[in-house]
Image (tube, rainbow, N blue to C red; front, side, top):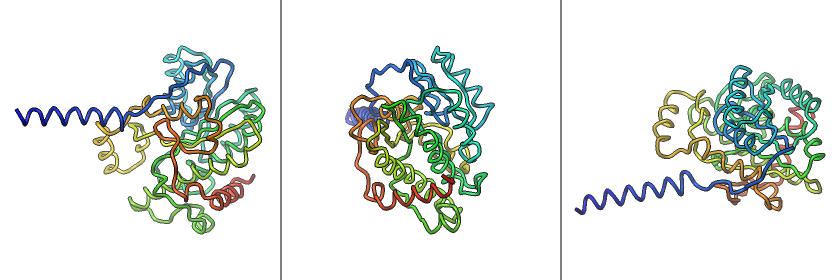
Length: 316
């Protein structure tokens, strides 16, 4: 009898842990988005796709900004069908190419009169170099979104109140920004080992948080606010470029410890839609709640330096 009670108790505790810690809170906003336009980068899969579906269901005109034309157009049909909305548009965007980012922004600004929410969701875990010679994770996870946001800022200001939402990660806690390495190698680190690649990903996620911190300061006096966030550990395709050891490990852990994309999209939706969080401009969120960050993630000097080197790299 004791053994049975012990097993039942462990099952109950595991259920509570999964509900409270793993799945977590949901976005409580009931905001409708008719007449509003939203861009979601990386919206052909994972939490980006789910976020786009939810926003389209709420009436928004949703721009799917994705690298792959084939995958983007397939997602377009899925999202239209699942949301019941025809106000969904695919526009090609390769965040690893400054030329592509500039072309996307130019085409968007010519064809779309509004921009109310920019969700910088896309991210990758992959070594290599971008078209412009930068480390892949630094170039895509940070620089591409930095350039995109700056090219669209005037439109966001015109349409205020508006928001910029930067999807970061809890991994930013383990990140650093090596400005010497950025200046000499156009990358956050030099190593290519499993540990160094994880650290490089963490570095790029710290860049997301620092970018948000600095952007908030530069947006004071406007009707644009910005937020960074940790979406949770999620069963998505982020690991598709990782080695087999990482893929097997994450997929086994994911059976219990990871959220599905809908659960993982909730903090993004909270930051994009929740009423009354404007005073939290520049802050970091997790589990639909504002969180304190380590001093390195809100360092004024580091965030300003990252902004300035990013401007130089992007040529703006």
